[in-house]
Image 1 (cartoon, rainbow, N blue to C red):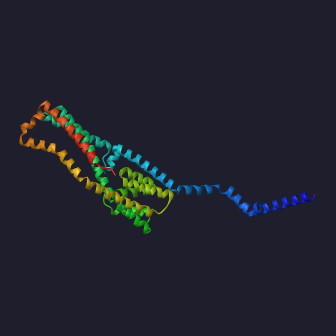
Image 2 (tube, rainbow, N blue to C red):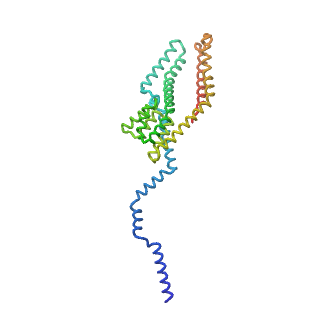
Image 3 (cartoon, rainbow, N blue to C red):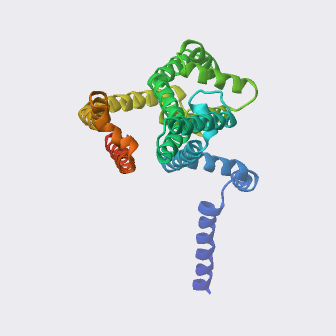
Length: 324
């Protein structure tokens, strides 16, 4: 009996000690744990979501999504003629543009026929002046306008950084840029301020601005603003880093332009030499060059020469155009 009683007492003692150290906690602590487990799942989920959003992987994914969306918008802007007219700063509608192109094409078709030239030369001139020249002019004006915009955009970002550090709202910084910056930067920011004034969000206003001015600098700016609105952070510091990157890109572009200046000059000389020689020979000995315009064989040779020169100029243009 004594061994059995000693074993029972030992079992009870060990069980009591285990309950005291493991399961004998305060009931209030257990209640708090149960309340945290059953009463606050939404708060815990929101905290976990915010923690996940601030990880480097999430930020990288947001940047990639913003870049892909901007690339899709840029491709859409390149295709649309209406967008190209806006980028060139022209108020002409698409219908008016096609009417002007048709008038130029008809005039280019009739004038060679009045001087007795071949119908093929007249048709080629009609295509060049009716389709090629107007679209080239719109593209040239748009590229020049985008270049002016990009050259002053880093200064605009610096204005925003200084304004935020001094306590000004971002909207007031946009107004300062619209008032003080030269065209087309000032005009574009003025339209941005007007869009914000009629109820557009900043992201929507930047998207419309990007449709009018599809530049990489504005794309980077819109991405920085969008990520800052979603994840928070120091906007002045982020825009300051963006300004440094934009100035480094501009410096690299100038360096590339300087290194490729010899190739650009060579391409210009090679491309302009055949037309210049033809004009000089036509002035000195008109009868010698007149056969190219009057005889069928000469007109055919002239057409082949124009096609080959156009192909050569296109290839040289692609060789000296650097994207960075």
